Amino acid sequence: MYIEINLLPREFRPKKSLIRIDFRFLLMLLIVLGALGLVGYYIFIQRSVQNVKKQHEFMLVTERKMQSIITLNNEVENIKKDIEERVNIIKELTSESDLRFMMLEYINVMLSDNLWLSGINESNRGGIISFSIEGMSYSKENISSFLASLEKFKHFSSVLLESITPSPLAVRDAFNFIIMVELASYQPPTEEK
Image (cartoon, rainbow, N blue to C red; front, side):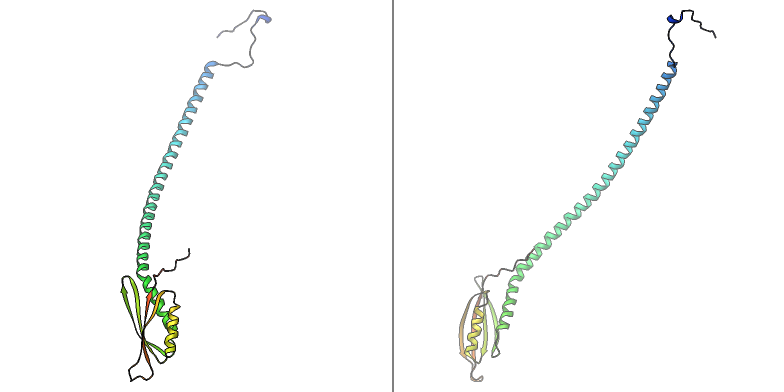
């Protein structure tokens, strides 16, 4: 080791900096810090990749669940359409039965005490449904008021007294009658939504 002596006058001597920096140490420090930064960045990238993989797996599971839900929904829609078609068929088949039931209920209410029905026969001529109502009464006035009541039923398109004849001698003062009625086309009531 040797001692360095500067013999130049003070004003010509190079000025010393307060902090002495060893460039080799600084270079080594920069290399270590750079390596640590790269290792940290690598770990960050690895974690990001793992998070992306987890998200991808979650999305695949969610997609499978959604696919099964869509399949179930399609099956439910198909079943719903099938049921609606069957209900519509049943409504079409029973609409006339509903009308017949309403007609019988109405006739039952309109019967007076001295008027009896012996039969109701249905016939279909050219798509027109008609009924022959046969009965007996002790009074022509009862038959007349029954006929007027039938004319008030909104689902009959025509009401006609076909015949009125005295009963056989066994039944005194009685009259047999036949009334023909035709059904109007039936429109079932629409359901309010």
